[in-house]
Length: 332
Image (tube, rainbow, N blue to C red; front, side):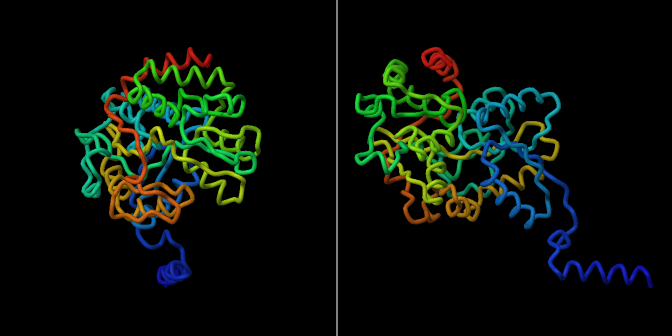
């Protein structure tokens, strides 16, 4: 009798909406991610609702975007703790591949994602891109700059900010500039920006905050940092550089020796679905779909409409010596 009563109350609780009652626990997956928590949690929660697999995430600090997690995965090589690495950019994912820390997995969900967004060896897959843009204050700037070279001109002296180029998407940006302009050309641009009073700060969100507050009139940041502040009504907007816009995909990879490999592959399958990319596009970050058949929200440009930089992502790992030169140039 007692057993029947207990079963009745358990069923009643489920009927009142206890989501955890919808299926038996199915274990967990450990995801290391450099993606901002506010964007990642919606995906984690949707995955758990559908599969019953709990996500145990480890996030990185804003000031050390990606690099801290990459170093941790390397340090755990002998006894991996993470199953999946979800990176907000691509360069450091390529570095993990070069270090032999990723395992090949070709997800069936990746159908429709072009080869330019996938590793040829199946070590990582890209999706949901952001772009590196010129952010500006709409109150203080009436004619926004349209190129990176323009930011180094006298009209913008002591008015521009950029995140530390040793980390995150800014590191990917300077590495891409070295590919597009050659190392000498990229260093020339950065040297001109420094001479023009460039302010280097801890992260992209800090750049956007400075511009929104009018402390700096313009800067280099990611599209998501601008969209969030525009949504809040702050005086901020962006221009896609006409001398080459860098589109940076999210990347996901299976960690070599993942303790929960099957759960890790299921999470990757979920993350790479069209529906998940559409979710990220509709979210506050307004990420640009890499698939042609996933709609972008109003105001978000389609990638083919931009003059994007052509990047060989496989060469990104080799850019570390160049990034060291940038460190010396900017006295970081």
